[in-house]
Structures are given as C-alpha cells and as structure tokens.
Image (cartoon, rainbow over all chains, first blue to last red):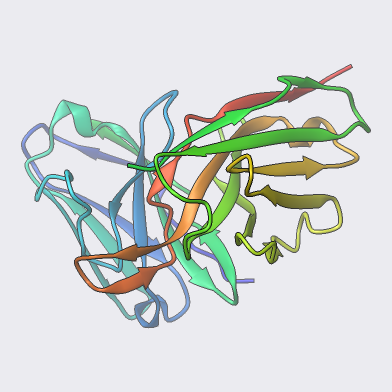
Length: 106
Length: 126
C-alpha cells in the first residue's frame, strides 16, 4: 500500500516561514491535499490539488508537489497556525493520510 | 452549507459492535458526493475507514474491511458505520466527512475531505 511520510515536528519563529514535507513514491504524479488539525477539533482542509486554497484559507498557506515530495508552506507564521498537519492522497481507490507533523510557533 | 453530525454510544465493550450515525444537513445526501468515516486513536494520526455513495455502493479500507459495514438511509438523510468484534485498538475519535466533492474553482471533482463532523469519541472497554 502507498505510504506518506512526514517529519514528526517542525518549529518556526513567529513571522517566519515553515515548510512541511510529505514524501511518497512519485507523489508528484498524484494530487496532494493538506489538513490542519488543532487540539480537540476536526481537521480542516487548507490546500487541495497540490496548491489550491479553499475559500477562507489565508494566502499565507501554499503548496507544491514534485518528484517524491510535496510541501506545505506557511508564510508569516502566526501563533494560531500551531497545529498538526496531515497530507493526503487518493491511491488505488483508497484515501491515504500522511503520518502527521506537529508545527510549533516559537 | 452542508453540515455533518455524528452520534452514537461513547462506550463499547470488547468483542462488541460499534455503531455510529452521521446526520447530513443543509444539503442532499443524494448528490454525487461520497460520504466517509475516518478515525483517529488518541494521540495518533488519521485513518480512513470507508465510504458510501447514495446508491449504496461502498468502498472500505482493506485493513478493516472484514469488520466494517457502512450503510445509507436517504429518507433520514444519514449514513451509518458498523464495526464488529471491536478491541481496545478501536478506541478513537470517529469522524464522518464528505470525501468527494465538486470544486467550482477548478471545475473538477476532488478526492479530499472538505466537510467534517465534529467527531465523537468511542472507547472500547469492559
């Protein structure tokens, strides 16, 4: 089965840029989606199809996908961006989630 | 705006059956979307359980397929999850979500979860 690997944690200084990676075999050939999950809350879709933002998501969130790595970038990080982030793809008729990354804003 | 709300027992005994329902409001369950169940054990990541179309067609995660049944009740505008032979490993927050939707920006159908219920905690314990 397809696997998606994320770093366990990423730290970013307030106002700086955080990059969260999602590794998978030839992931660049797939559509990657990203979710933000704050403690005690349901996940929220923040990026779909590699780089598209749903309505209401700030343009500080952006995404890219190429080769074996997809990346979620959070620019001008704010305290409210502190959360867990998950990537997700659709592969062989299954939804596959990444292992998740905890983002800490310092 | 479509909203989802899970309901069901918060405690299930080992070897018993977990049953949850997801009520759909603000939209039609008979649209071209697929409706999913996703779970998250305490302190762990997300796991897709399975999905259903309004026609009753289903698709399940192979890791759970032998124990899972997802059904739909269009008259009640809800879909349900049944997980049999539960163990403590099935303790998790269970979410219902819309997992296939039409995006009016890209004019494409998207295999992502754009709408989620608030989640319901289910503990397996004697």
